[in-house]
Image 1 (cartoon, rainbow, N blue to C red):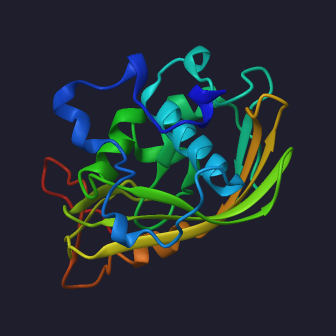
Image 2 (tube, helix red, strand yellow):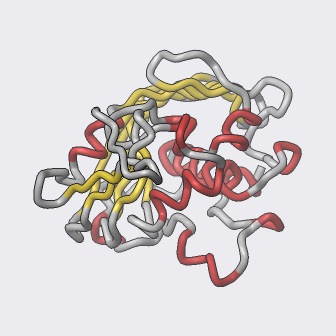
Length: 228
């Protein structure tokens, strides 16, 4: 239980040391944290559970190594969409699993887990997370959360048309919020996650405009340009 609810650690599937700064930094600027929960509170237990789940989902490439979930029952769903299993997230990456295709990003045009993560981690190396409020306790835990970090690099990703989109870094905070309902078993492992949030709010906070955003269409080697 302590390994599930304690502070996050990377475990034996962590990336190479030189890649460590790309891990979510949950101690990132403590002054920016809005909620300071008591160590023994339900809020802290939920916060640690989700942080450990995110570490496992992002850095442990075999579901059999995930200790935060009930491996036989676990599913997740986003914004009322279909339930997916853990293998889906491992295949496409955590970002592609939770963001639908739009004019700035497309899971269908991100080749794999590593490519999808690179687009966001190059832009924002550290992405902190906290529980703002818990509405109900186990076995069905509903809570409001906040995910934030500083846009330190340019965003570069492919959109729903397969076009490469670049948004220049502005160095300011990107701050998104959402609500999650987590169903837990008697070992405090997740059996299902349902999350609601607005991914477009995330991209809009990057401040895309004619001055800050460019698109790079694939060009024919013979010089012909596609009409879009």
